[in-house]
Length: 368
Image (tube, rainbow, N blue to C red):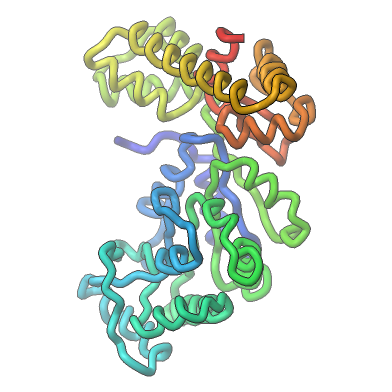
């Protein structure tokens, strides 16, 4: 399927990449708003492959409970294409004085169009890093790799998707703080490497936003669900692409009234229209959202005291009349609970709370 819209965000990110690295950039937004699709579009179709080397790490589907897990994500082995082999060999030569053997792990990263999903490292050196658990050694090795990329006339770019997954890991202190300090060194101090961190965890973004150590060193790019005008255009785009026809204005308005501008929900509706009636599809989605919210509230009531349950219900009732509210209208403990449970999304830069999706919003309005 062709990529749709996001030209404003693409222009902003490309402008950042074309300039000297100076900041850590956080790309954030609600669940399934299209953050990963956006960054993949830029990586695969908008960058000059001769100018950039991207180190892309997707932490989304990987269980990370220990420091070793994170290190194994960073460092993987390759079966490079011949056209890339000489560059990789030359890159490693000044770094590795001993055995050139690579570690053999089940998930072997691929090298495609200068996009790396792991950093090459000899087996014995990786084993030593895992044994010592010294983050300085890891970061020094990474810096040498990035410097070699620069010497080859290319700009290194780090992209970490769902970075919050390592928020609780510890080495000497919290790994996340050591990592941020390293990213500050790469961007603000050495101007060596662009760093982009993607996250749908708005509590994590709020925590990062309020960290004094990142003041003046980090910027934020919101990738939100589509507004109504864009959502209706997206429906037109998909219906022609998938159904080979246009939907009526009433049909488009009905779709938006149920699922709003959530890209993944709009895609689902249009795809299902190949075999089902529109009202049947939308009713199914809404019933599903209502049931999930009902069971969520049942769990809250069973697992907490009556006062806490009442505060949760009162907080959700605020959204019966409004899709967006000021964050401080809901007590901190309650709003953080609802954000953590993916009922609400917080934009900490604007101080705005809203349901994670229109479907959740519609469920709130019908249950409460």
